[in-house]
Image 1 (tube, rainbow, N blue to C red):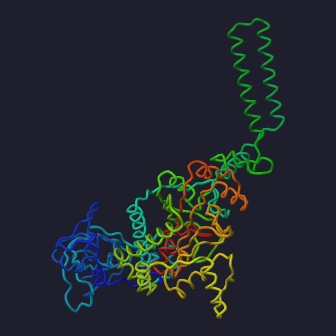
Image 2: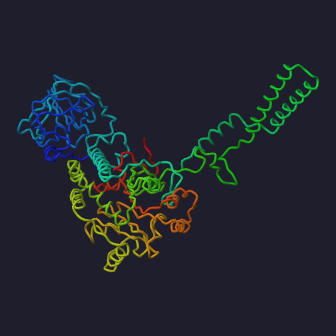
Image 3: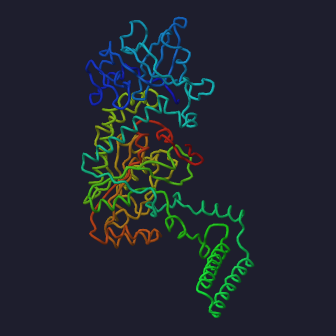
Amino acid sequence: MGDEIPLPADKLAAVSLASDVSSSSTVQKARFSDRIRIRSILGRPDGGAGLAGQKVRISGWVKTGREQGKGTFAFLEVNDGSCPANLQVMVDASVSDLSKLIATGTCVTVDGCLKIPPEGKGTKQKVELSVVEVIDVGTVDTATYPIPKTKLTLERLREFPHLRSRTNSISAIARIRHALAIATHTFFDEEGFLYIQTPIITTSDCEGAGEMFQVTTLINHTEKLERDLIENPPPTEADVEAARAIVKARGEAVAQLKAAKASKEEIIASVAELNEAKVSLARTEERSRLKPGLPKVDGKVDYSQDFFGRQAFLTVSGQLQVETYACGLSDVYTFGPTFRAENSHTSRHLAEFWMVEPELAFADLEDDMNCAEAYVRYMCKWLLEKRYDDMELMAKNFDKGCIDRLKLVASTPFGRLTYTKAIELLEEAVAKGKKFENPVEWGIDLASEHERYLTEVVFQKPLIVYNYPKGIKAFYMRLNDDGKTVAAMDVLVPKVGELIGGSQREERIDVIMERIEEMGLPVEPYEWYLDLRRYGTAKHSGFGLGFERMVLFATGMDNIRDVIPFPRYPGRADL
């Protein structure tokens, strides 16, 4: 469901937040706004009890509100997004009109005094706010507000991408996603990597799959031209001939004036008229050649007239570009949006998604696997230390095993086995009666069900499978000595399956040229990539982590559309 009960404040308070929450008797105000974040109150080891007597200003949105004592006062559950727990706020009717405050979704800013709730009230909070003044109210029309206090399905919440961040589940996922992003930058910074911003618009297809979004202005220009041709039809051949006749006549007039030895002023004026006629003719001829539809040469679209002077696409990966910096700066990484025009409606696919892609110079496949394992384990530890409160909410509402899964990955060395061995284990399972939807044989690309069986049943821990058949991997992966496999690796984890895909890159110019030819790819778009092998080639490796896959793994969510703020998939691109 989309909006389950949030984690009780006493659970939140038990989480160690030494890095951002003080245990002193005072609470720190937000630096850039005149308020106290609710996390600063409830996220303390004492649940905020040590702040009793403090006067504070808080702001947030009302999750639930109810009048009590025959309308003499009201209790509000207020959340500002800084943590999953709500702060209980008590407002007396003498302070404000309660009817404007209690509706779910109402935004309030209030001043008040923190106090210990009376015993026996049933609240699990260690502190509540008694309001002395209502500073600001953003009211809600309850008849039309689409996010009620009752539960909504996650599917229903996708209909309101501009409002769903106010729900407990989506806000927790957003904080977890943020924590994973910060962990990513922190890990690579600590390991000496440089963050490189690779282009979103590219002329290269990293994966050779062809499922790319095209970037063009030709369609806009064509539509504009067609409207213009309707409103202002192009000149006819008769119009062109008439313009040519005018040029001819004015040319003859100039010649006659010169023959008659007319004055200089008369000749200059006549020449000016001739030049005007020539300009008009050129414009008429140019406009007469305009045709509706896309510009073409030899029956093909003429991309030389496009914005970039050639075909361009939204990137499916920043890997190729970031490799150029790895071959000059050594260890680098990119972290940004990528796009794939795959008409898939599954719970595992998005048209726009984020990738983390490090490249390691002077590193082989073993180094690559070591880095990938260290990175994943680092993120799991980070979440357990920084966002345990949000993880408990996910465990309570969605996946009871998500915290144990994080602990397993954070503390357990990953298993490693070759692709060939993995196929053997799967074939053994089939021989013993295990049913897979996808066939098992050497040469297949492992399906999610195969990956999850290996991690969840056979090994019961994360795995790294390496040395895949060359026929199912990209041209840039280094060919092994057997001539059949490449130095590729995938990190597989429980719940999700493949989390990371990587390889040692092919640094030998002759071998990579052969691979490009084998796959039927054009050489010209990759000449710059081949230059990295022509000029000072170096052994290097890298991998890509699907960021949304990592959020799925961490949270236990089932649909990838719920772990990205604004999901894009076939038929939907809201906001």
